[in-house]
Image 1 (cartoon, rainbow, N blue to C red):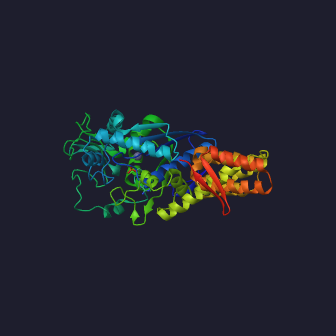
Image 2: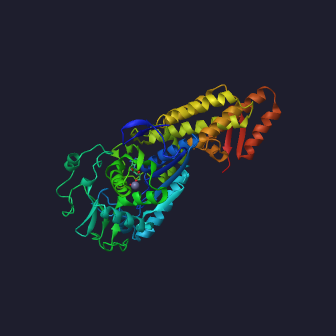
Image 3: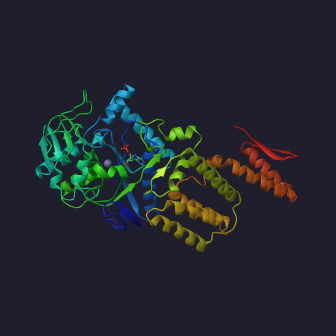
Length: 465
Ligand code: AMP
Ligand code: ZN
C-alpha cells in the first residue's frame, strides 16, 4: 500500500509497526453544530482508507474522539469556545448540545455507510489522562505555568515545524496585533495544555487539577485518547488539511514529548470540499448538511459516490449540478446491477475475478485512487464476465466502496432505469412469443408495487407508494 505522508511530503510504502495490525487514529467532530458535508468528506476518506487496509488483509483498530471541550473558534487558544457558542445559540447546556450533535453525527456517518470506529470517546471523559500527561510534560520541562495556565514550550521541541513545513517566521506573519494573546507565554507559538483562568463567563465544563479548577486545551485530548486506547506507537493519524497546523503539529509535540520517542509514522490529510464561493463554513449562508441534500432528493450515498469520484488530496468543489449528474450516474449504476441480479447466469470465473480484483486493489493501493477503483467497477459491468462473476466482483468491491450496490432496498434509487430494463425485457419476450416470461415480468413488477399499462404508444407504468 502506498500512501502520501504529510510528514515526509512523499508517497511512501505503508509499513505498520506490527505486521498486519494497523493502529489508526482519526480526529472526530466538534459537536457544537451539525457536521457540514465538507467535514463528512474527510470521514468518507478515512472510511475508505480503513476499508482498503482491511481489503488488503490488515486488521485495523481505529479510534476517534468526540470534541466536546476546549476547541476555540480560532483552532488556537483564541476566539470563542465553540461548545459554549452552541449552548448560547440554542439555550441549552453544553452537555445537551454535545449529546444532540454527537447523535446527529452518528446518524450522518451511518447513512453514509461509514463504519463506526471501534472506539469512539468523548474528550470530557478522559480528564485524568490529560492531567497525567501534562504533569509528565511539566516534569520534563516541555511545559510551564504562566498566568495561571499551563503551556507547551515549542522551543523545547526541535521538530515542531516538521509536519507543517512552516517555520516560526511564517507563523508570526499571520499573528495580528489586535488578537488577544496571553502575554505571559514564552513564545507566541506556545499552546495551552490546561486553562485555569477561563475568559468565559459561567464556563460549565471545568474540573479540578493540580493547577486549579479549569479545562484542557483542545490538542491534548487527541494525544490523550490515542495514548490511552492505542498505546505508545501509532501507525496512521488522519484528519482534514486544516488539522495539520496547529492541531496535529501540537499533538506530535505533546505525544512525543510525553513518550520520549517517535510516535506516529504516517500522517494522512484529506483536502477540503469547497463551495462555489470558497471555503465551506458553518456560519455561511445555506449550511450544507447531509439532511439538506436529502431534502433536495439526493441520497447520502450519492454524496459518497461524488466524493469517491475525486482524489482525496484534491480540492473538490460542491455544486448541485454535480450532485444531479452523480445522482443520475448512481441510478443508472444500480439499475444495471439490478438487471444483472435478475438474471443470474454462468459460473464464477476465477481468472477473471483475480484479474479485476487485482486491478481494483492496484487503484486503491496507489494512494487511494478511488476514482480508478470506481472505473474498475464500470469495467466489470462492461466486460464479458458471466453475471455470476460480475455479481461476485460487485459484492467484493462494495466492501470498500460501500455504495449498497446489491441491496434490494436501494433499487428504488435506480428504479426508473430498472423498470425501463424490465419493460424492454418484457417487450422482447412478447416479440418472441414467450408469453410466460412476459407475464412473469409483469407480475414480479406488480408485486413490487409497479403496475404496467400497455397502449398503442407503448408501455407506461405507475408506482404504488
Ligand atoms: P471539526 O468538527 O471542525 O473538528 O472538523 C471535523 C473534520 O472535518 C476535521 O478532520 C477537519 O479537518 C475536517 N474539515 C473541516 N472543514 C472541511 C472541509 N471544508 N472539507 C473537508 N474536511 C473538512
Ligand atoms: Zn484531533
